[in-house]
Image (cartoon, rainbow, N blue to C red; front, side):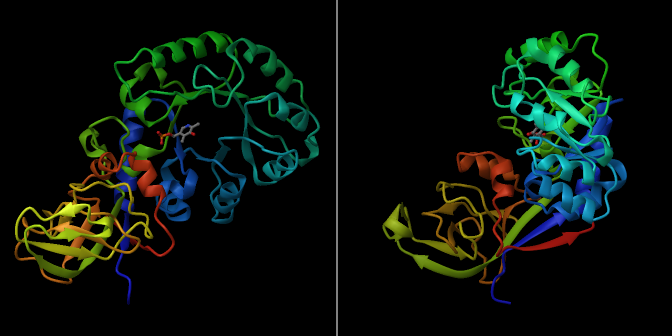
Length: 362
Ligand SMILES: *Cc1c(COP(=O)(O)O)cnc(C)c1O
C-alpha cells in the first residue's frame, strides 16, 4: 500500500448525532440533509446508517435521489433546488422525489406534468431574506393557489425558507426571517420546514414541523468558535495519515515552498503524507493544529500537493511511520477550518478520490 491517507467514517457517531438532533427537535420530523455526497462522508454509507431513523432525506441533485432509490431507501426525498429543466419533472415523478418550487420558470413545467405518472409532492420556497432561492413572501399565497390547481401536483404542499445567518444567535436577521415566513404562510395548510443545523441550536421558534439538518448529523458546527462536540455531537469523520520523514533542521533554515517558515531554533520537522491533492486545505496557515501520536505538532510552511510539514518540538519521540491526525477525535475539524479561512463543511466536502474511506461501527 503506497498511500496512507485514510478518512474513517464513524457510523455510530452518525447515529448518535441523528438521535441528538431528534431529541433537540422535539415533535418536529427530521429531514437528513445528505447533499454533496453527504458532506463528503459518502452518500450511500451515511444513508444506510441513518435510514431507520430519518423521516426524509434531502439532496441537491436528482442524481443523488436516484442513488438513494437505487440503494433501496423508501422514505421521502426532497430535492432542495427543485427541477432545473422541464425534463426533470417526469424523472422526479418516476423516482418519487419531492420538488422545491422557488421560481416562476418552474411553474409551467409543473402545470404541464402528466398526472398519470403519479402525484408530484412539492415544497414552496419563500425568500425571507437570503435572496438566493424563493418567491417573495407577498407572492406565497398566489403561488400556493396556482400549485393547488395543477393536476399532477399533490395537494399536500409544504413550505420552506432558508436562513442566511442563523449561526449568529445574537443577530436580528433570523428573527425577522421567521416573522416574515409566519406572516406569508399564515392560515395556509401544510407542513413547514425552516431550520438548518444552526437554527436548531439557536432558534427554537423555527422548529415547526420539520428540521432540515445537515452539518450536525456529521458532528459539524458553523457557530463561530464552537465545534460540534461543544453541543454534544460527535465527529463522523477522522482524517489520518503517517509521518514519512523527520528532518533535524538548524536555526534559520527554511521549510517548504517559498521558504515561508524559518526555524526559530534547532528543531525536528516532520513530513506527513497528505496535501491539497487529498483535500487538505492549501490555505491552512503555519500554526494550524495537527496531532502526531495524539500530541500537538502544528503545521509549518506551505501545504504541498502530497505532503505537509510539522513542528515536532512537542513530540520529540516521534518516529517515521507514526500516526498523524488531521481532524476527528481529539482535534475538531472546526479548528482546522478556522486556521484555513473556511468552514468545516468545506473541508469534509473536499476530500479527493485518492483518500481511502473506511467505516468504523463506533
Ligand atoms: C444545506 C442546506 C440545509 C442544511 O444546512 P446545515 O447547516 O448543514 O444544517 C438546509 N436547507 C437547505 C436549503 C440547504 O441548502
